[in-house]
Image (tube, helix red, strand yellow):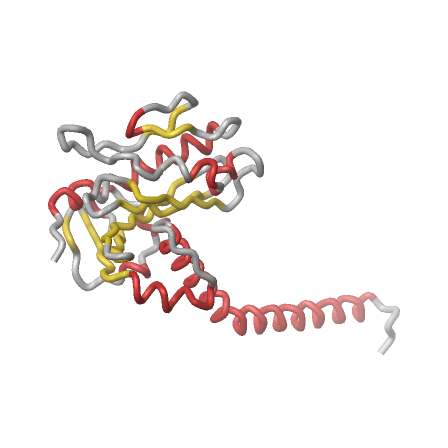
Length: 231
């Protein structure tokens, strides 16, 4: 075969494309179980972190199984049977009307105390943001909060995933003095009282995204939390 002909060049390129595509497909298929396992373990780590439990990926499953006592699914303020809370895709659920969403909720026990862990998901400046907010047994007092993001700006919006932002949430309240459910407000500085935290300086859009995320996601839980009674 004349290697100087255009036909040879085209054939060689086509063969290389097929070979590379096959190798990439094989690699993706082979690595997917490991990737899925890492994603699952990281999710467990974040759920546990919201109640102050730090664990590496290898130990996440064991500590999760020992700590999370119930995995519930809530739709329109009512408990739904027959669904696996851990498998719910929050990104898909948030595209539905609030009354139609299936919202996962985790009940944990640690050091003799009960916690309600609520997954959150929303939109920041450049992409999705998410987190977990843990309430104490009174279903009002925030015990801890964990936030993360995909593409927020380092030093600005990305600060939502740092202690300087997250450490403001413990001891904040999700109910007012009359028992009415109220969301925590992310303020542009000068946060005061039991229901406010300071937003990120220079990360206004991401801070607004966190506020919108809390407002949107908490709508799925507020009625259920008012009426739920521990067994």
